[in-house]
Length: 353
Image (tube, rainbow, N blue to C red; front, side, top):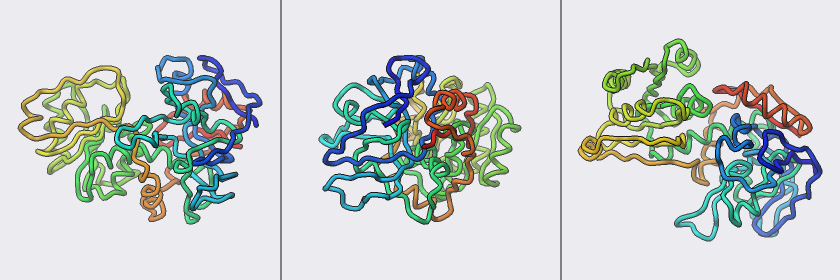
């Protein structure tokens, strides 16, 4: 088959012939139709973002495709089914403390990466059978639009991790960014009373209020942490139940501290950005308010089906996303560069077959 391969740590991929995947028990072979391009792939390939990788590697973190072959242990999937390929793969032999990889992107050494490392920048891919999620026919077969599932799942995972409930208020850090902006729509779809949206200027925040309505409350950030805490509370006009942190790694860590200290008693802060620096927090308010502060890496297996249900209900809309930037597999390097330049809240660059 044809594939785009990272043979060594460099920015460019080699488009070449690569051995076809071989079906095993517990897996499926998917014919790739569309694969979204991660906006920071150039930095991952070069090593500037030091994600673990096992080479040679076919990148591509998630895909939309058709089942080409499944093993005899398949119960529901059959040849021709349209599926979302979930890149979050967890070991099956230790449900209590599983190892996790992101297919085509984040690959610690080990058996899981050895077998399932190759992603969607190819004509075919091998996936664990539980990671090929059948897409309901009501969502159509526009593979490019359906790549939006991947973008929506990340903030959805954070909200699920924080046990977010209808009628609650979420303070969304990084809400104008690549994943955070999607979190606005997901929180509203889950029944948020309000989404408090901090940013450096009202000018950048206003388009999100216009897009999603007046349950989105913008807050202009200050350099003073205490002023931010007061402003967050005023915008919420009630308790802040959850902080979802999806900030760019270059944003000041003081914003996270202000947000966590604005939580109500028994509130929860969910950290998802994977920053390289440290977060210093005062002990006393965390203890007195019984706050929960937790990390979240992606989402549980059940999230994909639930998110598709929100899409079927019309609460999450693929049409929010611009998916016109499509590139053939032969032009994958152009796609990778374009994804970096065109990265935006609702822009998706896609490699198509």
